[in-house]
Length: 88
Image (cartoon, rainbow, N blue to C red; front, side):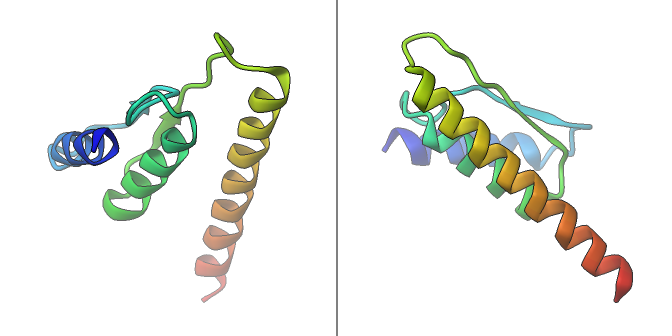
């Protein structure tokens, strides 16, 4: 699938240990939901700082707002995980 192709390509790049990686909205076949999934996979698997692009072209306000909320939730979860690790 397109998603698997992008996932494999980004993992190959991540193996080069870049300072950060950027994933464009719509990665993995033009479906915006994959952007966050790909970024999250790379962050978890390779511990590389991620930048997830969010574009508004061809998207409704509701879709953009939903993607922003998903990204905010992911960031909050990551902050909580870091706090927990620091306590332990």
